[in-house]
Amino acid sequence: MIDPNTLREKVFEMKTNVSEIKSVKFVIDDDELASEFTAHTGKENMLLGVVLPSYDGFGKEDESGIRSFLQFFVMEKVDYKTFKTQDDYIDVFQRTLLVSRKMIKFFFGVDGENCLSMDLDYSSLKVYPVSKKSQCNGYVIEIDEEKYQDF
Image (cartoon, rainbow, N blue to C red; front, side, top):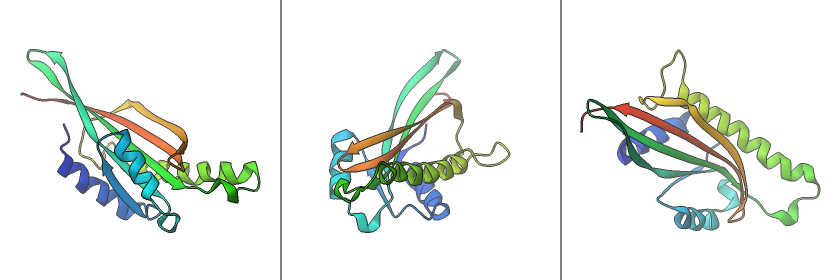
């Protein structure tokens, strides 16, 4: 189970390695996320929205643990009026996907060592595009962590 303070530390460590990310906002829910995206300006484009994790339990008796659900939004503020062609639209997704890939490489690290010092569930990794979310486009990265621990 990753706590908010540890997540904050690891995200800012990751930000120093992924220089394209200009702004990081931590949020609790979709309403807060939308509000942060709306307030975001194009000057500091490439926003990372980090949703604080939710948790659930798994297993039974002496083989139990906690699963953490992590979600990251790699987004750019867009002005659709400036798009002259479909290529301009696709270019936003290309840029945000490249940054998402850098983040994923950092998360999973090298030689099986991941940056979060967590038991990341590789099969849970999901990356999918998001369009027109409070005038932002980009990708969502979802990763789960399963940690066997005593309660």
